[in-house]
Length: 78
Image (cartoon, rainbow, N blue to C red; front, side, top):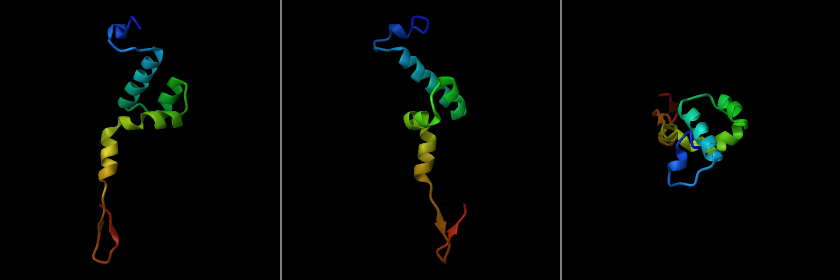
């Protein structure tokens, strides 16, 4: 903890905080989730459940997805 200088922050941090930070950094760097799970020693499902909020652009894209219908009511590919 001293090496990272995180012990100088006003927050109460632990080694688990470092693990969480490491997983977060790997996911933000677009390391495949399976590789992150192998590095962290946990399963993919755990990472998906606890870190899915990190990719806000993906969440926004999915929330704003839409479609169009033609005159007969069939979906048009975009």
